[in-house]
Length: 385
Image (tube, rainbow, N blue to C red):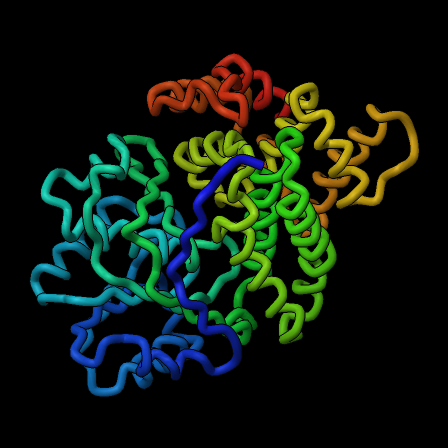
């Protein structure tokens, strides 16, 4: 395991009724912009709880953040901040809302064109507004990390960002808030968290015994509880474990000091940018084919994955790897997530559009070895049809 620094300043407020604790964690003199997505936050009563918890503070609301948050929408929120002298941001929603809020927090203080944050690297960011979050969908881990993704349909681009300035100050995680979520969103969340873990784990051996064991435990938890969370949507203990697993999947801990492979995510982003397919579903399409295509580089870790995650010990090494990849695809399918490009209306002709988009965005050397080229991506996608 390599040398590393680990820093995560987000305070987690976990458990039933923790929205009430907003009164203790939002500055008393703050002028708050509550940022949320669609009408479900109102219908489920979450926004009502947030309003009550903010007590006598001044706040305004900004709704309409999309499932793949749009760049233009974030700029409208920045304008609302300037027009109303906002001093604190509060994201109420899932990963898309929190991602958007982080970007808004940076863009509001950025002196240049905010698009540069996405295209030129967020190292140019020197400050961001303080923000907190109330998580309603366990999936992305955005509630406890410093990154996100923003979509610009006009440019057919979905681009990531990361900055030490945009960690949430705190995040409220109440598993009961997930009870009313559609099964599709819960399934997506479990799949997204699963792939987050895999991309920090399934690379090559690096003597990372603690991180590997932690990652394997999280994967087994998702395999067990992902389907159960769909069967018993109001089982608090299952939803609590699912929510906490999704947070731990991408809060930086299991990835500290280990090689990482984010090729599946980068390819998946371009599929979403092409036709707005749910993020998690693009990952479920790409990952099995990528693992098979890159099995030479990942051989030892694939065998470890087969044994320690899936309990596959019979057969030759190649047969065990085949079985582990098949089990991965079957897990997604058990969640109700289809795993072929054709399931989402993408045919062979569209593959070149995806490959070209990756090239235009500089994604030409992906993977833990930086050696997955556009030609490799084309081959992986063809195998995903």
